[in-house]
Image 1 (tube, rainbow, N blue to C red):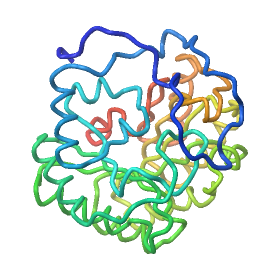
Image 2: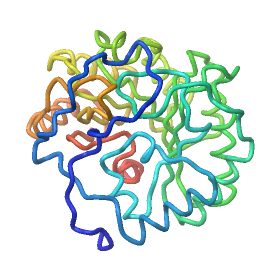
Image 3: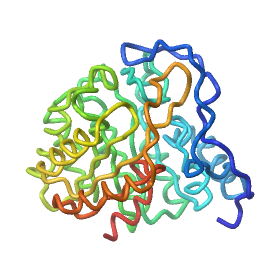
Image 4: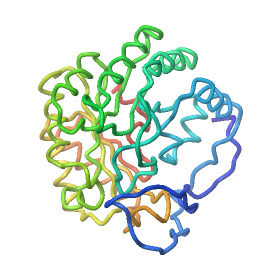
Length: 314
């Protein structure tokens, strides 16, 4: 962290970014509230480690979810030399109301991308690599084979690196999930994201039960693999709904849960209904541990891959 300038800024979200939005978008024209609580102030990404990592990603034509999704932890993670790779392009076929990744018609699949991810992992000397993707619902396998090939390339080029994949639901195709599981990542993550009542507004092209089935099948097909999921709060859910959703996730055999505060990326996205204070995240963590999770990472700035390398050790 020594290379980070001591600059504090409010998490990105005030700048409107033109993009195609679907049914999950907010139609409000009210500007984003700039009065963020003090616990949501983070460091500005800067410094030599950050710049070197940015140049590496550009030189290999790779994307990171850190940049595309405006992650508030980018300064911390990039300053420490870690990043979450986003494969299968930078354009998603879905239009979730919370996500900053652009929506549209994706380009052709880049068959060489897994090799370049493997090269970047080896060059960064990562102990733990996290790989996610956009949704590619137009592909017959949803992009599962590219996920599997990326895992294999990381194994080939950096054998000591553990691998975590954050996957889409593959539109419920069990054979696609099985293809990723066959490549044997150490951790498979699939986010439920929100409570079932809010799915039509927050995740209009997803299904709550379908996401739970991804978690259930993962533990059924690969019981020794670490299964992980995550949810957001601040979109209008009640405390009781969050607890019920956590219980549903735990009942699928899920090992690790992450819980974080939703932060609105632009005025075109769903508004923030409430900022949950740190004390409430502490309470969710305690309740989650009683449900049988092996670990619960809960806090305002927690995201799916936040402290992911620690989850492997745990």
